Amino acid sequence: MKHVYFYFLIAGFLLLTSLRYSDTITSQQEDYRVFRTVLESKEGTLDMHLSSDSISYYLDQLQVELSDDKSDLEEFKLYSEMIARLDQGHTQVLNNKKIQAEWLLEKKSLPIDMYLVGRHLVVGEIIQDDYDKTIRDNDPMGGPSEIPVGSEILSIDNKTVPEMMEGIGKYLSGDEGAMGFKYYQAQELFEFYRHLAFPLDKDSVEVTYISPKSDTVQKYMQPGKAPIHSMNRRLMQASTDYVENEGNHGKFKIVSGKYGYFRFTSFAQSSGAEYELFLEESFRKLKKNNIDELVVDLRGNTGGVMQYDFIKYFVGGGVNIGRYVIAKPFKGLDNKYVKKMNMPFIRYAFLSWSQKRSVKNGTFDNGTVYTDPVDNDLRFKGKISVITDEGTFSSAAILACHLKTLANAKIVGRPAGGSFYSGNAGTLLVKLPESGLLISVNPNTFYSHLKPVDNPLDIRQPDTYVNDLVLDEKERNKLYFNAAIGLFKD
Image (tube, rainbow, N blue to C red; front, side, top):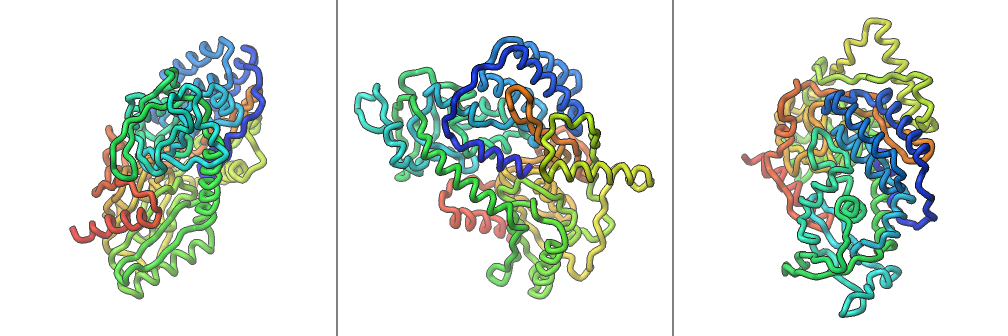
């Protein structure tokens, strides 16, 4: 999942390129054939949340829709809506510059930059290069249309942020029908996805916001050109932050001589001998300093390696913590349209071979995973608070599940974006041959130790809900940490 989100951000650099003509219907149907074939042959457990009959029905409907000539943007919307119905957040349709160029050329954007902080929609800075793009010919006041930087937008065209996100959610995948991960995916490209769901066809649109001075203001704004350069600068910073976060395997420190604190922004690099040494040294420090209150911060961690090595320090060795299965193993003919020159594909081929060998040797046990042995003196048996938010996904969400259900941890923040029960993973990229559209499919299926329930969202609800809008990152970190240690007093 991690490399897909990075691609998603890179695709967000809004550089206008020449727009191709719409595919012919024949080309659209060829893309559809490949899409359906790969989805059915490579998606781990395709019918995890939607029945096979329903999936077949919607795929048939998609074929009918693609019987008419569609633009790049229209195709993107149709495929995205189909994928979103699966309720599998790992499986996505990735936008690209051609799709975004079509959006930009429609000139129906507001003259402000917007991004999500959690579930709050915030106004970003407009740089000088975009000054001309914020001027509207039909604005009687003339000059640029402005909303103060740092303002929180409450509604656009009488639609609140939650209402807009409900519409946007048609085009973004989330686990088990939850909205959380959809907020996370829309955070840097909110205006693009808002346009998909609610294109602005009026000459003047009402925007309601709270200014940095806490005044509630209503302002009418004229749609037109988007502030491309300002968006690009913000997206570039988001990509830089992403790469930096993905490059470390985690951080640990002791705070005020009383609390242990793990901060994991990614689990992409959290495996191997170096990581195991980091964990052992961290838990030795907890033991040496007699720390019995621990905070595990998983905000914005979209996953990576399953954290079976971490959870053993809480539950000990030999504990059943779930299953991991290559549900759609490697087969040569199935990989024709899958991009192969990348580590995820190589890992997929290796894991398929390894699973085949385990099945042959009689050691597979349906993919059941047990924790490895651990020094019992290093096991942590104190109080635990886990911080989650919309970006806590995949292996990070499963770790939150393990800590909550096996180590009696409390949850702080907002519901994790990912499932505590199961999901498809092991992301592979598929390129549709005619349009070049990229689809991520996931041939592996993971399960926690929990049995399925009627409402899988209940378990994600935090013991302490935190949703304050704090723009300064250091102050925001303090807010969540203080909320986490506050649970130790209860």
